Amino acid sequence: MWAHDDKRQVLQDYFQDLIGKKVCRLQTFQWPQLQLNALGQLPGLELDRPFTENEIQQGIKDLPSEKAPGPDGFTSDFYTSDFYKHGWEIIKPDVLSAFHAFYIHHNEALEHLNRA
Image (cartoon, rainbow, N blue to C red):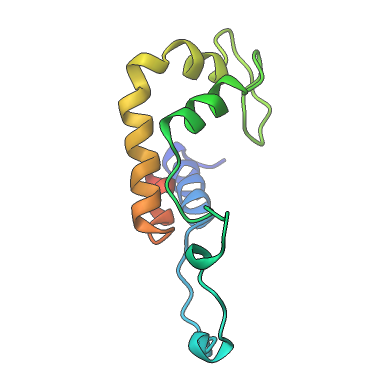
């Protein structure tokens, strides 16, 4: 049988390695030679802008009730989506801060999400 600390370590190692690892590339694109327009130069495209508070709040409102988002399908008496919906006014500053940090770092620090 595995000891509790061994199980904890296996789980921690798995989830730390799940996403967000930087990979050193031996080759890369020569972007200037491709002569592509930057997203900001294309009319009507706002793909590279931060999420607005309204967009985040709407996303939370659109979460299905009585379901726990995530791959495990785990549910309980108080569902995850309901927590976000009912506690929005309390958790809003922290959620907005997390989205802002995600935007500012441009996906550079995804490995930190595994340690949250």
